[in-house]
Length: 330
Image (cartoon, rainbow, N blue to C red):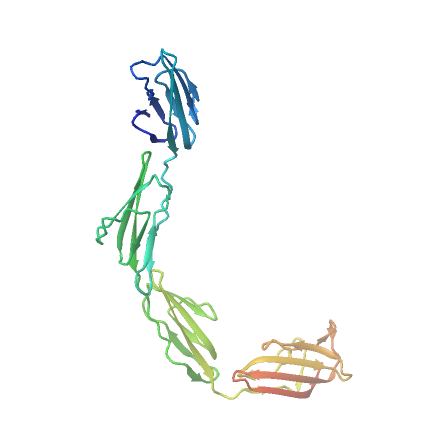
């Protein structure tokens, strides 16, 4: 592409890779010039002795062009002009479809491409825009389809997005409830199977679950629009905690009574320690569901009397410490 630069044009914006057909812009009164000395910053070639040279620009920037004309009388005239070379490429427009899940819409759309040579034009088939909406950014407060067109001397581009109000799901697990141990209670987060569900603490993904123990249950419901609602319920164990320590066990690999452990109901933490008759600790656990298998230092413990010390904290904060002796039978 070639562009003519006339004497009355003090500067010009062209695209990278374009050429300019220069015309001499010096005057010598009634004399006609007979020689020309051109210099072109950023141009190819960067000098010329032609009267009307053609110069190509492959580098972006602002460059000075100077022409010195010589006349038959020997006088000279010098003039300069500036050329701006731009890349002009339209970069990817950083806008995407957007869903607003709550509150009113207050959003700034940004078309990027922040160069002073770009021109912007916004339009919408759904919303009446101001005639002055020709800036890089557009502030909106209504849902709808929005399009921005970007152009300069070298390129153009556009992008259309949709801004909408999303559907926020409703969920209500009800008020906290008192329950007793061995409960079997159904908790429901609604019947809309288009929604997604995630329960805590156990990670179920169904719309309803069967709660089998006391504690706090939380559900996150996500609509197809990506909007979420959260609710939780506390199931409070209202029954007093119960425990029992056996007085003997037989670790002979023949059930029952292979493991020495307490029977527990309504407790959230436990510490169990086992000592032999000489006061040496042979076993300890904090696991509510485990017990002693009758091994000591990797060997079967000898038959006899042992001491169990049990420390407990109930679901309701109740604390209990107990100690008892029991018999290991082989």
